[in-house]
Amino acid sequence: MVVGHGIIKFRLHDCHALKGKRRIVRSIISNLRNNFNASVAEVASNDLHQRAEIGFALVGNNRALINSKIDKLINFTDDLGIAEIIDTEMEIINL
Image (cartoon, rainbow, N blue to C red; front, side, top):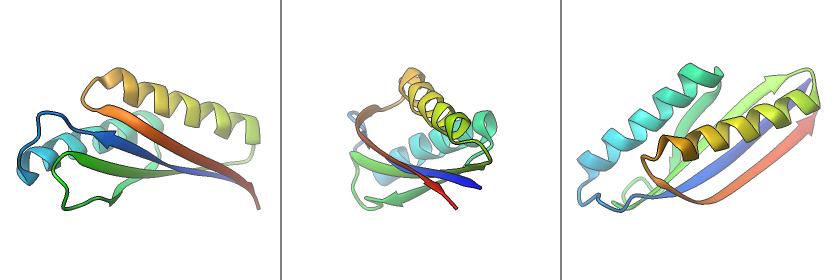
């Protein structure tokens, strides 16, 4: 079994309230869940208006496939254009 997980850190430029941030984060999370069948959640920076950190996890049986899906997930998130990606981290573990 292969597990791939990571964190995507965002900067939200036009966000001046947590309500606006929640709308953007919810949109990103739902798009990733629907398009990649991944576990996705906001994992940090919950009280900061212009920062968001979203964690994700994928499970499969092929390391190359998980790596490819993670790359596509990050590219898809960037192509959404909802928020600026400032950093990404990922790790793939063979169990």
